[in-house]
Length: 335
Image (tube, rainbow, N blue to C red; front, side):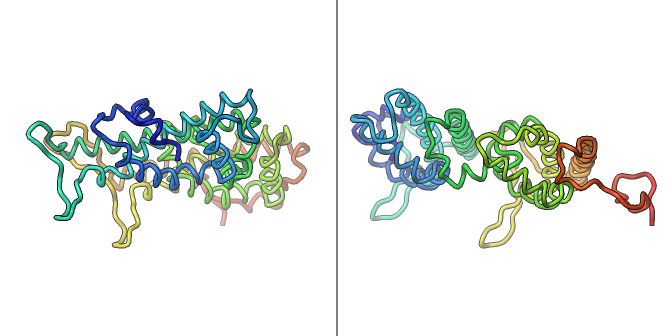
């Protein structure tokens, strides 16, 4: 675990990231930290890198095999990134459990003459803060690892690395450059499934199976082919907008064992900031606008490939009769 009791007699490590009261005991929060670590940190790092970083954190001297004196400072920085994300995600995921008292007589809300429970809007705001800070810190952690991959080579053995490496839009920052999602990792994670759908259907159809597979295989390499790198920006722009068009109606929907629910926020007397879902008309307008922009960028992708066909011999130039075409986005149509 990336927080230990010997370093937290007065919650020294925890208080670097959250101004928690000294009345809190580390033993009470450590089970929740461990749970969050298994759920969020381990899957991203992969077992090999996770195990090495854990070994270094537990006993930095002598240096574990695989960590040099030169790279040890980067492992210390990585541990801080992990801790920042971990403690925020711990308090988000376990907020309700930490906020109650459990004993032989049942479950109780903790309250005294000097301390009152939070209002509901304060609880919601606090939980959202923990959640956003935690997931955003995960992005920072992953970005740091990838920018120093020579020192964290074991990360290459994780499934997460392979997926990110071969994705046309591998991270939040790249998506946000094309479509503003406020650099939110949470939003990017929800959109990722639609990015995959657009890759599998629209992008693969446009590139053709042969070129599509070549681009994917090149992205998996440490040094992809220069022509593939040149092609990626032309793929990313239609991909991002078409993913938004697909995702529109689904982002607020939660699937539970009790059915499908749409998540939104309602106004309260204490909360002046109100968030409400878009109307059906607004959803359709956003989806239509994003689809039109995506299709326009798709035309640019096709035009780029046609104009540079010699550089991409796997790409099959469209041919046949000019009367055989898609009517999407055209002012006239052929039948």
